[in-house]
Amino acid sequence: MFKRRPQVEKQFISGKSTRDVPEAIQLASFKKEPPLAAYTGPNTGLRVLDTDTEISTSDQCVAGVNDWNNPSDYAYGLSVSLYETDKRCNRQVGGPVADVFGVVVRENNAIMAIADGSGWGKKARLAARCAVNGAIAHITDNLHKLSVKKPTSATLNKLLHESMDIAHKSILSHGGTLTTLSIAVACELSAPSNQWGLFVASVGDSPVFVYCPHTYQLHEATVDCHSKDGNRVVQLSGGALGPAIGTLPDLDNFSMSYSPVYPGDIVLLMTDGVYDNFAPGVVQAVHDERALDCDSGVSFTPPNASPVPGPNEGSSSPVLNRQTCCPSPSNPHTTERPWPPCDVDLHRSISSAHPPSSVYAEEDTQLIELKKCCESLPEMMKFLHQHQANLCGNMTAQTVSSAIINFVYEATEKKRIFKSDCLEKDINVSRRRRADPEFASELQSHKSKLDHATIVSYCIGTH
Image (cartoon, rainbow, N blue to C red):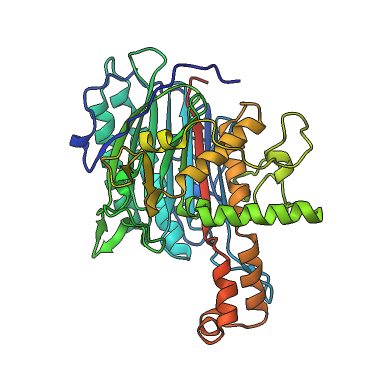
């Protein structure tokens, strides 16, 4: 159970360069001992920079880590494809999964990264692998700069900025295409005691969030990656590493940020395949389906559910069904309860995460108008409230990752079946949609997004 502390409103300080984030914060000297936890995926994750192989040597040291199959309840990640299956050849569309995640935790610091290769195919996956590998390796190789007596945030900000450049150069040298990349470093501060800092660099549309179980608030660290008009175009990432403009990256929405964090806070990095499926319309559709399931006595269980996936199972189905990932406190075998009203005032939570001066929320007579780029935030926050309540406050990075991936898999199930049936019947969806209004209406009713969905999470604290 989390120990309560006075409510502290997080304020992310962010901008487009190292000059826009604090440079004089005193960090505790980084511990460089062998990692307490390290995990990557899907499959070989960042360990193999090759388009044609899924084989890695178990004793191979990559980015300063020998064992990348060492997850824990405080450092975890999952990746799954939400695309339909072509039953004619028993092959899932959109393979291979082009998302990659990595997290490595030492005594008083953690390095996390997530990348979403643009488009489909091995070259997109390679770009994501190069990005995550290059970023984590560069920071790891330079930990000595953060292990001096009085390291400052200026050094860490510079390493984060450099790691983006290293990731881009790795993509070019290995022949990858384009990818998003978000890097987050959580570390202990020298003062005040028991306070940590979260430093983030991001390009593209793979957002970074912090959920505080003590105050029930969810905050986004990557707000400066959103377009200035607040619109969200799901087909566009806003920026990318790799040969986007000749051999140059597209850094149009590159941002850096800093925020104080505390033990017990959970850092969440995710691809847009996760975040976009928390849009209000998608969430409401899931609620409606669950209500119908309850009336008919049907419950949802993803296929091939398994407890904890190894590194070669990262792209398989989600690990927990509704009964196991969200048990009721009074009866661990009952199905998930409906989401209750928020425990805190939603207006205050959103406005503190996105001040009225930002482009993400506008305050007018005590009302908040959510922009398209942040409309999923309240739904995700309510989901985390319920998950925390269902586990009596004992949520972990692992339970959060599993519950979120399980939800987006369920949210996309109807659309996945519909698209699979179209493939089996040789129906050209685009052509049929233009010619058949009834078909177009049915397709439009499936509001979820089929994509690759990946999350990596870390619970702040000395482990």
